Length: 287
Ligand code: CCH
Image (cartoon, rainbow, N blue to C red; front, side, top):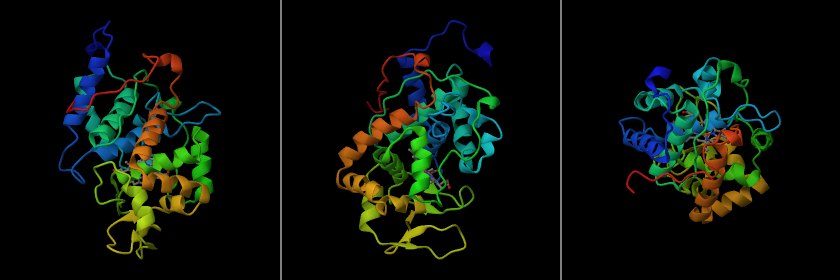
């Protein structure tokens, strides 16, 4: 593997832009709602969201989801699809680390799905299975506000940031063979909007009657879903305040989402490893 990379090759911002562009080329496909974007965002998030600020373990630095048992953690079910998809890019740009590739792919997916710019910089290194964190660090969709706070405070985020991050559920869908839940959160699951927050307030949500795990559906069409942890954002007073602000103002959501996702993707990476003192803004494929 290492032999394929020229010994003294130091990639520039342009080289990372080439990787971004290649990920962008490969987004559209006959897969789910027509794009690999949502599952790539989920990969970048699950690679980063294992961080614990007290022990400074976990996070995106070592890309430990490549190894078992982390690859088999329940929360990561289905993410092999995203990892395998990105192997095509890795084969063409073997010098990039997996942590950089996964987070850059998440940035690309968000930007290409009409989201805001996500400042990003490279510097993650490939680690080993021994660097993996134990199961249970990612959120459990069946739980409530206390659980969300325990999980996200451990990463170093506050209530406003928990709500902003949750807006990612404008994208993608739940798969019965992955999480057990079923369906999309919005009518436009491959475009980032603040619809997730709008729908939380504007629709009447009722518990779905089915054999699967407890989830809500919109009363009007029955085609949209919310997880118990999504619904908490309009039940808990502190969360609700931010959810309402994002429902009313997509620009505010985009600004806060950009800031918090940029930080999320850098969790667990020692500052001295970054090659640039400030994160970069990568160009969209049509710029
Ligand atoms: Fe999420 N998410 N997520 N999520 N998630 C699922 C899918 C996506 C929770 C549970 C689930 C974030 C936060 C939470 C995405 C991004 C983010 C699924 C369905 C569950 C369950 C998985 C499946 O069946 O395929 C819970 C609980 C939380 C608590 O806060 C955050 C934060 C982000 C990103 C910033 C995206 C995108 C998806 C769609 C994936 C796809 O394949 O379409």
